[in-house]
Image: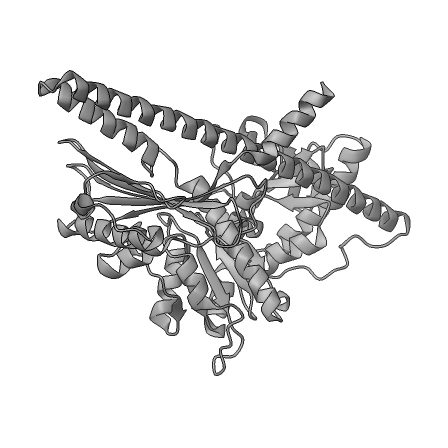
Amino acid sequence: MTIFRETLAALSTQMVREHQVLHIAADLPPDKFAIDGARTEILKWAQRRGGSRLPRDAMAGRGFELLAAGRNSSAVEVDLPEIHAWALRQEDPDKHMPGRIWISEAIIWRTPEKSPRFAARLIVGSNEAELDIAPAAPGFIRQIIDTVGLTSGGRPLSPLPWYIGDEQAQHDLLELLTNPGRRLPVVVVSVVDRANPEWTIDLEELAAALCGLADVAAILPETSWALTEQFGKRLSVFDRAVRIYMPGFDDGADHFAHPLWLGTRLTSIDDATLVDRQIRALVAQFSTRAVRLGDDILPFAQLRSYARKVEQDRLASSGASDSEKLSAAENRIAAITKELREAKDLEQYALEEERKARYRAEEAESRERNATAQIQTLLQRMSDAGVADGEAQSLPQTWVDFEEWCDSTLVGRVALTSSARRGCKKALYTDAEQAARCLLWLGSECRNRLLEGGGSLRDEPVEDGIRNSPCGSDEFEFNWQARRLSAAWHVKTGGNTRAPENCLRIYYGWDDQTQQIVVADMPAHRRSGAS
């Protein structure tokens, strides 16, 4: 068995696998020249890459196959009343890494009821377990943008950075970041001095590499302040820092979901190069998750098989000779065989990526448990030493400072969900300081009772006019760090729920794994079927 496993391991290192590097999906202009113009640019690019002249009828959109010693080019066409599709697959050997093949796929299609669509896929065929590359969009993306144009979510794509230099551009950026229809990440690079905007990263090169994958925006200090005012310091970007704002961003977003590189990490050319590669990798990885095969991209292998079927059906209905029909059948069988092989390769790749993701998740959970245990140990030592646990610290006077105060003062004891953070940002309840005192009570008296079993918390007074009570029929479940918790308790004032400026509600549950209270929602009364 050991010899068998060793043999399999040796063979696996020699097997060439297709690594999905990036996916791009966009819309072409609705005019009749867009498809022809985009196809022409793709074929020009393929001819330069392949180094051989393409067949004469390639420019007319016909299918072809050109074998050129590692620089193979092939195209397929499907022309039916319900769909017209054309796709190209171009192979290109890596100039520096023997055995590594870059595979670019470009697909254009239209249906009677929709505008023309465009998609692209970049794949690397290699026996490497991990790819050490700086992903970049294929050059034909920029060519298509320059000639006919591409859009994503109604927004024109560009290979150039977006310099935010006036109030209108600033307004447009803030609006784009929170647009629920946004499909692409936005990479925001900040500077310190408007008079001397020295960019830490080569913006022109980064924007060209991420063309069709992300917008790249460069902002001045005044826009950094605008971001801070609207979203808070934790979701802003300033002082030469770089941040990726992923789709789905809003003022209640988890700041860890929108990666940030501080300016202190960008003090040299080597630092900037490393961060540039990390940004490209994250954006490319996002594209392979967000742009789905079969939905947003028609895979070349499937189109090739379908084109062979259409040709076989045409010959059968037109009275072709047996030899012609046999040749068509053999071509279709070969295409289906290739499609099946590529499907298995893709399945294997997906399984490998899932294994890596599971490993990273388990590793992150392990680090979280270790960090939580260390925090709980420190809190216990502070308690044993008689060190105050936050009551003596200055309390936030407004909701603007509330979230940062919670994260610094209540760490390891009370955590806020994204819903609770959004509620605090939009709070109508006027007394932020009182809400902070209630959270301190949750992190001290309430938490100690839950840990030590020190009696019932039902109708426990928190301070004058505020008590802790079960939610009763208003109890609800919520998500917290991939787990389901129950908000069975709430801290409440006796205020009128019709006057939210005087009515405080803090709904919370207990997390056994991290031994902390998790606030599911606050500070407003939560509407439910019971209430």
